[in-house]
Length: 374
Image (cartoon, rainbow, N blue to C red; front, side, top):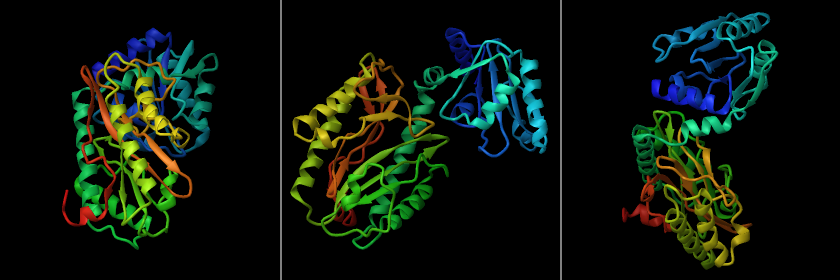
C-alpha cells in the first residue's frame, strides 16, 4: 500500500491537484483495501497533496477500519441526513482541502457525494481524475497478473464443465445459470466481472445480448462471453460454438475472426501504440469484406474492473507499457443470422503480448465437448 500511495502522491503533484476524492469502487480498494457498497449514505475517501488522508463514512461502517494499511483520519456521521454535511466540512478543514483542484473519478462519483463535496469545498474545483487513476492502475505487478491468470484458468475450467451438459432445447438463461454455478464451483469470487452473455442463433449478432428464453437449435452459433474473479481481479473471455450443421458463411466469418484475433495478439508489445492492435485486427476483417460488420473497438483494459484503461481502438495513441492488461476481441456480426467474437486476455511484455487465456480459439462443434475430445 505504501508504494501505491507514494505513486499516487507523485501523480497528484504532477497534475497540480490538491487532492483526490474517491467513493466506493476498485480505485478505493486498490489504495486502501477497503470494500464498501454504494448505498443511500455517502462514503468518500480523501487523499491530499501533503500526504494526509481521511475517510468520511457512516458510523455503522466503522468496524471496517480496524486493520487499515495506512493512516487515515476518520470522520463519521449518524443516520440523520441533516448532519452528514458537517462531517464533510470537518474533513475538509482538518485535511486542509479548501483550495485548488481536487480530482474525482467521474465513472464512479455520484451526484449524492458530489453535492456534499461541493458544499464542504466551496472554493474548490472538482475535476476529472480519470487520467491520474489510469496511470496509477494500468500497469499491473506480478501479483496482480498472477490473480488475473488464475481468474482465466477458473473461467476456462467452468466453461468446459458447463459445455458437457449443454444440449439442443436448453434456453440461453439455463446455460448462463449453469455457467455461473460452475464459476463458483471452480473457485471464482462471488463478484463476477459481469453476468455471462449467452446468445444463440440470430441473438449472437448482438454483441451485448442478454440471455433470453430462446432455446438452442440445430444450425445455431452459440456465443458465450464470461469471466471469473480472483481476489478482485477479473478475466473476460469469449468463445463460439456450432450446433449441428451451420450456414457455411457463419463458419467463414469464424475463420476470419480467428485470424483477426491472432493478428491483434501479434501486433502489440511494450513501446508500440494501442492503436496498432486494433488496426491489425480490423485490417483482416476489412480485407475479407466484412469491415461494416465489426462494430466495436478491438479491446479494453482489464483488471479490477471488467472495462478499464487502456482502450484498444484505432485512434488511441497511447504507448503500451509492460504490465498493461487488456482484451483482444474482434468480431463479425451478421444481423438476423449470427455473430462470432473471439476474445482473449493479454499482458504487455517486452517481447509482445502474452495471452493469459489458452482455451481453443477456433469455432468448434458443441458436440465435441460432449465426447471429451478436448
